[in-house]
Structures are given as C-alpha cells and as structure tokens.
Image (cartoon, rainbow, N blue to C red; front, side):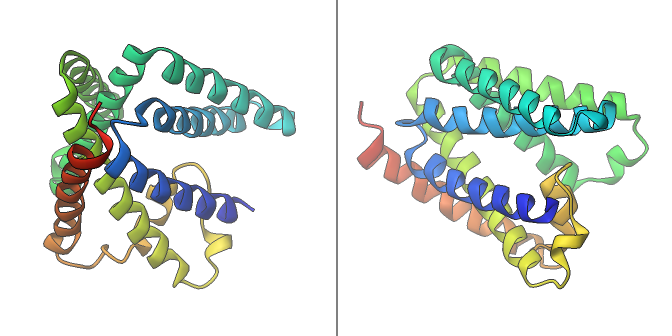
Length: 213
C-alpha cells in the first residue's frame, strides 16, 4: 500500500511540476496549496506514525487536517505563499548542493544539516517575498523544471524495477526511490540539461502567455 501511495504522490508531483513550470506565476497560490497540503500532511503523518502508531486512522485524519490548514495558509495569505515558494526554492538549492558534494555533509551532524537547510529556506523565502514578478517567474519555472525532471526520472526508473510496491515507503518518496531513478547512474549533465531546457521553456511560456497580469 505504501508503494502505491508513493507512486501516486510522484505522479502528482510531476503534474504539479509541469503546472508550476509553465503557469507558476498565474496559479502560484493554488499550486502552493497542493504542495503545502501534501508536504505538511506527509510530514505530520510520518511523525505521528513514529510517535502514536496505535491511533491508526486517527493519524491520517490529523495529518490531513494539518495539511489542509497549511494549504489554506498558503492559499489565502499571498505573502505567506510567496515566502513559501521562495523557501521551497531554497530547499531545492540546498538539495542540489548536497547532491553535488555529498562528502561535505557526510560527517556533519544532522542538526547542522537541518539548520543549513532551514537557513536556505528562510533566506530564499525573504528574497522572493521582496522580489517582484520577474524573480517569481524565474523561480517557479526553475523549481517546476527541477520537480518535473526529478520526479519523472525517479518514477520511470522505479516502475522498471520489480517488487516496487514491497520496497518503498512514504517517509521520503525521493530518498526511497532515488536509487532507481533513470538518472541515478547517468552522467550529471543528462540530469541537469533537461532541467535547464524546461526552465528556459517555462520562463518563455510564462512571460508570453501566463504571466501577463
């Protein structure tokens, strides 16, 4: 069951990545609602499963409730939504840095890694909040491209592996399935090139069609 949930979540994130890349500025609040709902709900569910597994369905109800609250905050409070968008970009940048130079973080305490990631989230959130339309368009296109390529590569690679349903969990979809990504053993340029291409196409499309307001 967990494997099915993970696959469904990846499909959802791929679709959200497409929308974020090409319609990020126009539908920023709606997209962030889904990201906040899914991300917040998953985090709370995993936390509760480790603390109060005996609640069973109760954990799901609580997680969904928390996800809806976070999603509502992202949707109805525009400044919060923009801050959250920048924060997600900050986490993305931090993740890329960790992937490029994993040795630098291997011996680092988990608390310090968390604090660095949090700092990236806050800094980029503030920068995005202070920026105007142009930076938001660029950030949404880049993040959408990153999300699209990352989740699509992981999804395709995972579906080619046998016994997928029994091997993965919902704790962290990307971490659980990243070893099966089609980019896992490919040269780095094969991963970053499509991200760059989609990001450029997303920026062009947003300026031309979906971010005129």
